[in-house]
Image 1 (spheres, rainbow, N blue to C red):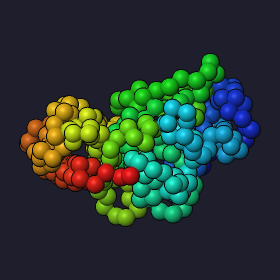
Image 2 (cartoon, rainbow, N blue to C red):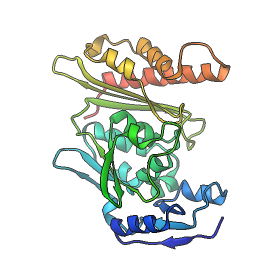
Image 3 (spheres, one colour):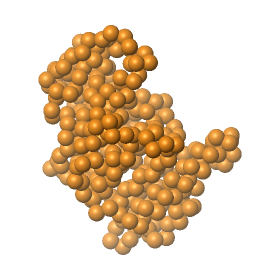
Image 4 (cartoon, one colour):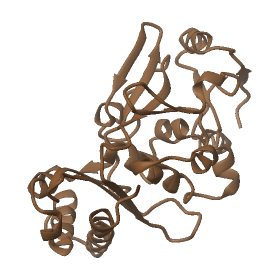
Length: 287
């Protein structure tokens, strides 16, 4: 590991100032679960680490006046798992509690996962699928990005060297009737090989008033199956054929049938996960 300077700012303003001063050689560190591994292999070689561990207002959860759930970027997976969330927000706790192992969940942070932008990480699919908003601090102030603006299409993020992800704002607890997340991994503590999130809102008559579908881990960034979601919107939930919709999702995200055996396997895997997520979202909404 290359030698580095470790700085511990006491405020977000100081952290941004330090990043600005030492850019492009400085990196933010929170839980360090991804960055430190990369530094050990010298895939990352920052000269300065700016720690966010002492900035208390970047951690924790709160419900804003708008009803949005605001999650600080340095909130750990363990804290998310323990949070008593209601409505579809309960799925956030469920996702956080079913990734990696206990040490990673104790130290790893939601913001760290999003900034690492590894397509296999569950949190990327979660924020993309639910349309969460990401608040970014820069020397000029705060800017808010949607996931498709935050993640670079070919991988990585659009964050500048002197910017910090401060918080993630999830839609209100009643924005969706249900959110279902499914993934496949080779071993219990592995990152996902593929993941699918389905979020739906039904109206009083049982029709799908809103549908969002995201597929993760199979492309450099999560992909929204917008065509399938648009087709399902307005349909009676009871009339949706999960098998047919899942096949459409796989084809929309991964292309038509054919390709190498690996591509065919990935398509079948996405289809199976999408079918399960759809069935769960349509039949057993969280409350």
